[in-house]
Length: 263
Image (tube, rainbow, N blue to C red):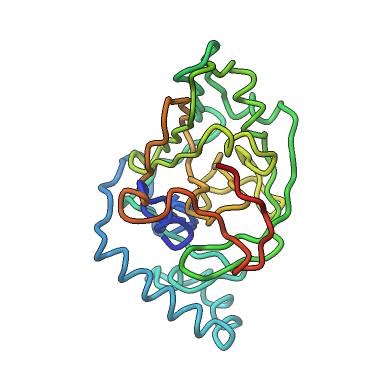
């Protein structure tokens, strides 16, 4: 969903931020309703190189970028860190836009009570707000970022996970990105089906209207444009992980985090 996130099956390539930021925030997306073709690794690495240059020059360019970003017809300003500090990536050429009328999130697989949620359904459930640093696998960070949404554990409990289940597979309505967690990881209190980010409804470029948020892991694990939660018997590597990213993507103490990993 990667800058923000890894390549699907790798979950760490660009997403528009997460890729889903490679899954986890991210890049360019064309309008409308066509599902795009997944990008190649060479194109992705070229985007990462430009992103690294943007991060290195950001202190000097920040004010100029903020003035330019609202009126840049080339779209190149999207390759620099914006005022909020996020980078934007996507693993497809375009992503459909969804809203209250047509957004759906399905919860199924090895559960007793499969369910499909509308956006209004999710908004009506109890909400949890977390404020954590967002850390991209490519090195950039946005400190103290608020996310708000439904705990993934609550949706799993409502579905009735079967005793032989071991993992979760996440799919996205970009038609390409996927991610995964073990069942124990998915039940952590800091894993959300997020509806709000930076105290605003999550916009399309950031993976809205609904994205996954896995607070203690690199942002590519926080798949954007979330559309499916499938309970499975084993972990199936995601988009970026199939391209070399770690399946267990804990940020860790080297980046200032003290979260205890969950298997």
